[in-house]
Structure formats: structure tokens, C-alpha cells
Length: 130
Image (cartoon, rainbow, N blue to C red):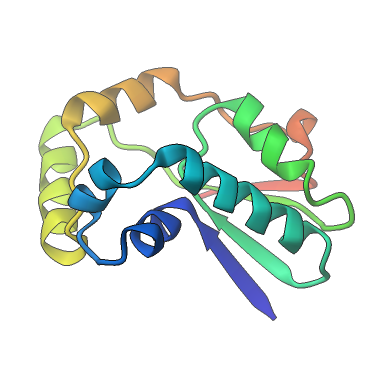
């Protein structure tokens, strides 16, 4: 079995609707984090394969989440990030249409600026760069 844990999905679940932009502003983010942590801990105690679907930009956050899976093989999948403003805007427009989710370009640029490349010292057994 494969489980997917997504913070964004939890935001929508707590909000009770599928408009991410509204949901993000409406929900109690601490409640979302509490549910996320609970699900990660529960998944780490089971033998199922788990996909953590999140934008982990910082090493500290990745290590914190990986520690919850002591008996799992941990593989990081790293997608190339964009630096071209036009492409970022284009994809954000598609995301708004398909997912009702838009991320301010300033937030995306901050994420890119603060990005720390994953490494095995964080607890990964393997890292795949796409």
C-alpha cells in the first residue's frame, strides 16, 4: 500500500471545500500542522510506503519529517525548480485554473532563495534529482 500525506490536502480537508486560496486564509494553520504531524507519526509506525507531498525547501524541516520514519527506506525526489519569471507566472495561472491555488510570485522567489539542496546527511537513503 502507498499512502500520500499532503499538507495542502489537509488544508482543504480542514476548510471543508476545494478552493485552496480561500482555505489557506480561513483555516487555523496550527491545527493543520498538528494533523500533519499526527499523520506523519502514524505513517512512520506502519510498514506502508509513504509519499510526503510537500515543498520541503529547508534541510531542518526535511530532517524533522524523516525522523518520523526510522524503519523506512527514505528516498528524496528532487524536481528542478524554476527561475524564469514568465514560466513561473504561466504555471501559477494553470494552477489557479486547475487547483484554485495561486502562490504569490514573491513567495515563490523567497522559496527559491531559501532553497537548500537535499543531501544524505539529512537522513535520506537515496536522493533522485530529476
